[in-house]
Length: 398
Ligand SMILES: Cc1ncc(COP(=O)(O)O)c(C=O)c1O
Image 1: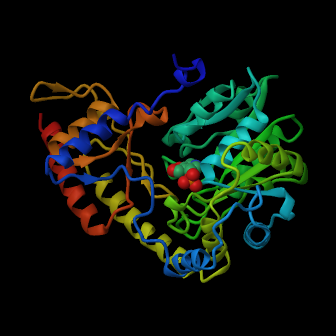
Image 2 (image 1 turned 90 degrees about the horizontal axis):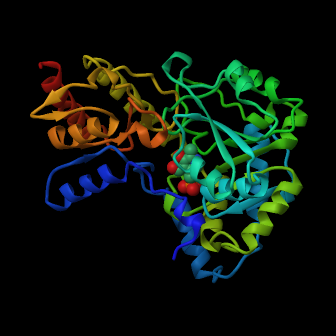
């Protein structure tokens, strides 16, 4: 008999379509996979070499529970120089991926019945992590009209006496929206004098376009910095998803709480990945710029192409590597006895008729949309766009 806790957690509803895509690929079908949630570039050479050196030097044992001090110093330096945030090394914890840092933060802050505010479309793990902690998700729906951003009015309405935490995903997975400094400061005003913590998920921080300047939530004010947990890591910026290396910065009490949990959980992040992360943060940063430029080129291409398709409505993303088209104009259309009733059907249609795999919006709490990842080469994107156009013309010509 499995525990109630585990029975309360669900796999993403998008698994079904992912499985169908997998089956088609196994059958030898030429499917273009636009569901990918990680950069398609290899980890930069200098980072790989640092890891190889770590192994050769037998840097292969348990480390300090919160991460090696050299890495925490490098993170503190990065936060100071790039984000204008001062943290000491004991206000930083290194974990096995940003996902673990978020999990530890939620476990350390959220009690049974506490409310956690975040917006939809959301990163799929937030509701389940809150669920595991016994908290209650309070979801603020957003759409293109506010660039998928929470407005101060909506935030104000969502706050109750039970609100314990606000999660801001900036840039956002899945919409690619990026909050400006002014927008962050306006949200900050709404919670400045309230007893609410903020989790600022900044994992896509370095993938922002149009020369935007990044503004970290913890910069909003001194008192909010004390209540903010800044989450970041190496996965997306340095194409290191498999290394499992993330970190959090917050006040000592929160970091100590997270460290206590981590000490009985993974213990510490991999020593080898920590050595690699040290090189990522302190070594040559050229790859970060190359990755960003390539993503921006692809964003421009994909946005222009998708918006030329009749019926698709697209918000132009400002960051990350996803685009989140509104597909509501296709709901109710029937092709070959297959009716498109929702985003799962739409993605299924694109998979079967266009041989392109996408993620239905329902998995992100946003029915009527799909997520397309452009973490694949421009050449493949060109073919994908042709196939999408052809498939959707079948619906448009009905
Ligand atoms: C918004 C967001 N936060 C956190 C993560 C987790 O990152 P990591 O690979 O460092 O655990 C992801 C990964 O997809 C993400 O999209």
